[in-house]
Every structure is written in structure tokens, then in C-alpha cells.
Image (cartoon, rainbow over all chains, first blue to last red; front, side, top):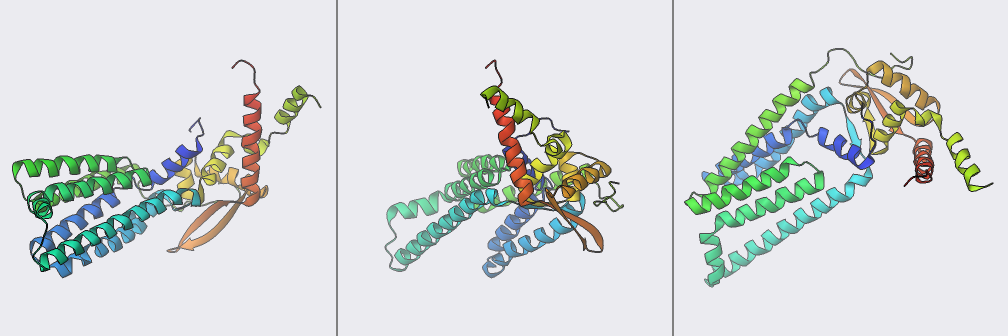
Amino acid sequence: MQQNINLKELERKAYTSYHEDGLLDLFLGLGIIGFVETVFFNMTSTASIIPALAIVFYMVAKKKITIPRIGHVRFSQSRNPHIILLQGLLVLILLLGLIFGLLVWRTDASGETPFWMKIVLEKYPHLIVGLVGVLLFCLTAYATGIGRFYGYSALTLVLFVGGWMFGIQAKRIALLFGVAMMLAGVVLLIRFLRKYPETKEEISHDKEGG
Amino acid sequence: MTKKEDDFTSIIDIDKLIHEPSRLLILAHLYVVESADFLFLMHQIEMTAGNLSSHLSKLEDAGYVEIVKEFLDKRPHTMVRLTKIGRDAFNAYRKSMKRIVDNLPGK
């Protein structure tokens, strides 16, 4: 039993233990692989369905695998400011992406794409995708307190900078990253299943204390 | 009342129901979440089902926690949450303990 009571640490522990199962990594990895694969084969309409499918499967897996093993918890409002911050930043990033996309589309249609933009888009796609990935994983790690996302951030940086240096296609690097994330998720899931085997007996509160 | 007498009274007035380490841990865990089920508390606090049940009953009798039993997928499911009384009592306990510790000589 713990001897020191640090409320912030308790909250962080409760939150991170809920994501010890690796399901987030597994489905995020699978989502990235699916997304990149569909983009590879120019099935852009299917690409948009992949993240939605990954979310649905994640929620089902959480209910069927995690909750029967470690129980269910609802987090208090005090954790919400971090999540609201994350959501706000994600919306901001998406908006900036949209504005940038519109800018490229408009200038391209009029045949006046600025020189710097052409250079950035054609020569450094790795660095753009890598930078967005680093930013997103760092923000997620900060907002959720799940430390391994800082690791994914570092991995994104290494893979995309490496890919750019060795001339490997950005899509292939993204695929490699998705596979690495999925494998990490599988390892975490196996560890979680061993640590928390599902109990056949019913465990619930008994007023008599037994 | 002098300051020393006041500090002494603070020690006597400490809520003994909360002061017990296991119950203090249960309340601390419930303090940082909105609600948690029995299994989650058992894993987090590393306590046996019998022990946890016994402590929860005492906290429920004092009105510090609310226990809701329900069935999820045909399995019994116990959700536990800290009540307003429990949250206030826990806050008062923290303040009392901090005051006592802060007034200890030597630092």
C-alpha cells in the first residue's frame, strides 16, 4: 500500500493506469497504417473512414478488455482543463492546416504558387509531417500525462528527419511509424493482460464486508 | 484559548474515521475522480475485496461516500463516489493536518 499521498500524483496514476492497456497505441497505429495505405492507393474517400473505424473499435475494445480487468472510472472536472487545452490546440492546428491548404489550392489554381511554398511542399514534406507529428504527440503527452507519447514524439522526429536525409518517401516513413506504434501497443496489451487477468468471480461491494 | 491549546485541540478534533490509513487512501482516490467502481479502487489502492468493502461500509455509514449498485452486462457493478459531506470532511482533515504539521517545532 502506498504511504505517501500526493493528490496530483494519485490523479495522474489513476488516469495513466486507465491507458496502460496499450489500446490507444494499437488503434492509433492501425489508424495511421490504414490511413497511409488508402492514401498510397489513392482511395482518399476510404481514408476518411479509417480514423472513425479506429475510434469505434477502440471504444469497443476498451469496454470488452480494459473495464472488466481494472474497473471503470469517471474523471473529475479538475482534469478537464488539460483536455480542453488539448482539444483547443488540435482545433487550432486543424484550422491552420485548412487555411494553409486553401492558400495552396488558391495560389495553385491561379498558377502563382509562391516559390518558398513550392520548395517547402516539394522538397521537405518529411519535415512538415514530422513537425506536425512531434507537436501533436508532445501536446497529447502534456495534456494526458501519458509519458510514452513523448517517446512517440521523439520517434517521429528521428524517423522523419532520417527519412528526409536518406531520401525515403514520407508515406513509407509514416507507415513505418504506424507499425512501430501498433507493435508497442501489442506489447503493452500483452503486459496488461498478464498483469490484470480477468476474474471469473464477481467482485463487488458487500455491505457485510466480504 | 492560547495558540498551544488551540493546536492541541486540533489534534484531538482530527476526524478519526478519515485518519485511518486505508480509509484515507480510499477518500484520497475518490477525491481526484468523479466516481470509480469497486474493482478500480481495489486495483488502485491494492486492497483485498473484503477489506475495501469493510472500509467502504464505514465511510458510507458516515455519509462520506455514496455507493450505487447496478448490473452491467448481467454482472454486479458497484460505483462509488465522494459525497459533498465526504469532500468537505476530507478538505477539513487536510487543513487540520497541515496546521498541525506546520506548527511542529524544528524547521
